[in-house]
Image (tube, rainbow, N blue to C red; front, side, top):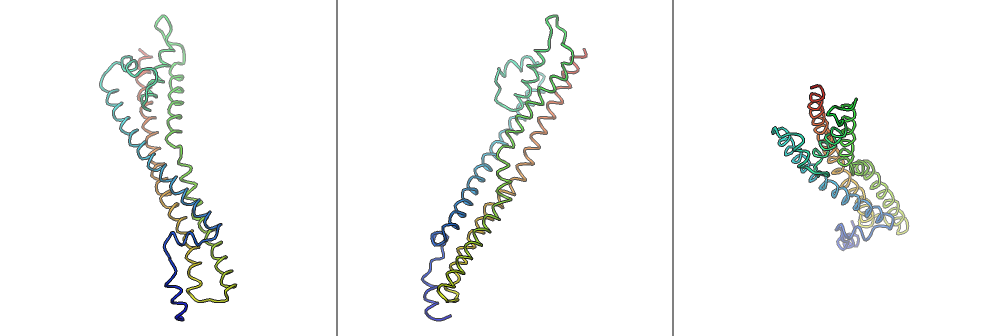
Length: 231
């Protein structure tokens, strides 16, 4: 490398912020988009981790009360009209339909069990939708961020070669800054995609386990009500 090229390379700032400001406008747009996707993904990840942790605690606490031997009517009345927990809402929906299915003479309207099951299924579906909300964005980020970053890299390298042609100089000190700026876009794409993919898989599995817990509770509760229907 010639002394002039070495001096030029020494003067260049290769910090991430400097690479961003030297990048072409299109590459800057790509980088900003990837950063927004990354921050949004982390927001969803943190929110879901806290939500799922709270949901697991709510399930454990409610099932402890449910299996404590307390009368179902007493438990239902203690929860009120709008319970906050997901398990409580599933239970409340089943008990509400149970009471509506009672006739004035104390008997039950025909097909009460199937209606109770459907009502609880609807309540579980609503809770499942809430658990899975936002996960599609993580999947989209994991699938598209590397390609968005690659687009920024290709565009940046194209501009770098154009600058080389204009300068008619292929010294490393001339080539390296443009290549470094372009590769930063790929790095940001991977930075956004990798956590999104990892946590999408984890959070999807956690959501499925929580939904399975609601289904299991609904089945157990339905069995208890079926026994009472047969007595």
